Length: 118
Image (tube, rainbow, N blue to C red; front, top):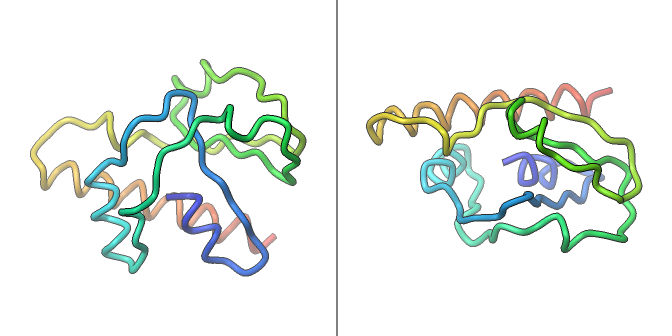
């Protein structure tokens, strides 16, 4: 979500990667489509794909438990952590999972817009 929102802003080229890349969360795909962002063709990537590249910022977007497991990624750039719950961790009905994905989506979008305005 953060990658797509950042790439929608002028002057940003964002790349998303994880420690344990899996598959796209269908509830996140639906939540993003609701705000006009199609991520259905995105693929999950590993941070190892980006080793040795230069970045201005390296932003970990994850919950506290995942952040505590994050290794120090040996890439350039100012490192930050933005704590958000993982939509894939939520249990419930499909509608509850979608509602949770919407909540996380909106919080990430607000954080990015606030940060980019600085």
